[in-house]
Length: 381
Image 1 (tube, rainbow, N blue to C red):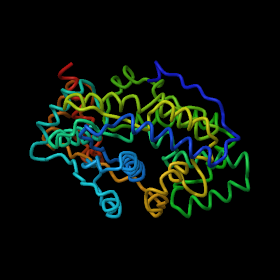
Image 2 (image 1 turned 90 degrees about the horizontal axis):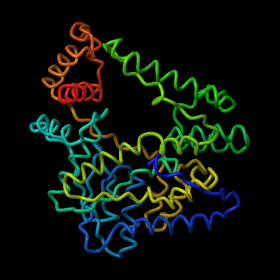
Image 3 (image 1 turned 135 degrees about the horizontal axis):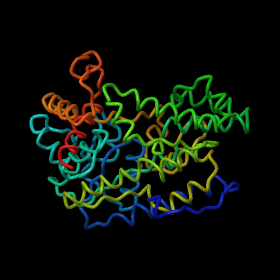
Image 4 (image 1 turned 180 degrees about the vertical axis):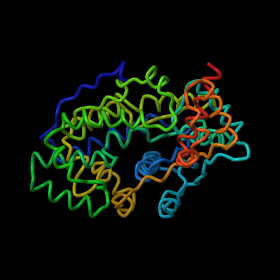
């Protein structure tokens, strides 16, 4: 994406609220309607409660019928029953079958043909697999929504740092409201300092990531020295939240996510569609001032305003919308043990991994996944 597309936009600093909301609604509705048709058997990959509810509600409003009959959720949490009742949707939870998981895991590795650092893609693989069984040939996905609408908590912090420099009175009000709505987490004294030292903050963050990478337990130093690439840990200099949002869209995760999501969909004979990645929508949102994404203690303000008339207001303006926890696939213990031995033989891990059981127990599920994933590709390269 970053190699082929360079967004161009002009700042719309003087645009009115009504005009901005109308334009946003029009572009988003076009983005959805251009990606669906009445003849398609359409499903929705349910990821974030607000983003996914918006797509489901707008799709129903555009087509005047409930063509999104199946929702495939990768979240291991309890869904708000009000959403189910309001949108009349059938939710199907996509969780790996542990009895068949080991065989499926290696089939998944073979499909993607490259290392994957977390378990989320495997759970998505299961969602697409189940969608295939339900004969859904087209799937809508909310990828990119948080990055263009300011949906991550870290964006809220950078917005407040921006306000701290530009408008202290507004900063105090917004900070209080974000805290009341539980959207502001981990705001510390250092945020006040970072507001005026963005260049130092960028450098410090990169050094912190490099240090964290070196501290991964049992990693062979020679392997790390040979393969570590500090360039991929480069952090942007952030003066306002859009700087980090732009970085997240065009420099980091989304490009990789698009690659594996589309590869999985192709494997099952499906087509993935991403309404929030429509280029006109991205350009328009980046042309708007930050207060169209963050206002009155809420993130995604312009999206909430756009759907408050087609969803219950309590859903559109829910406080503390926490992303449901991804279902973390538990790698079979036998696979982890075999992978550890292979990585020791390949001089990726040290022998200490067999001795220091206390640190072994500190591995989380993603770390176990990385060990098995890395061992597979070292053996099959």
